[in-house]
Length: 48
Image (cartoon, rainbow, N blue to C red):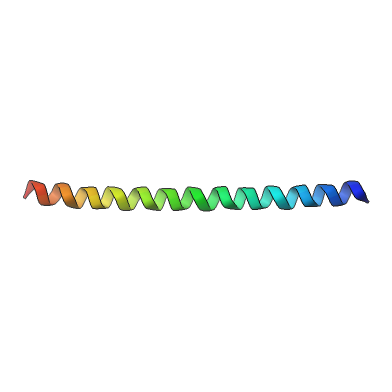
């Protein structure tokens, strides 16, 4: 019983960690895309 409870707690913690990693990764990718878009606009303005 204790072993099963410990395993479920570990699984819950691992799930939260994976969710946070996913969330951070997606946020990071979106942020980089926005930065690239802003830089692209700046370079486009400079070229004009």
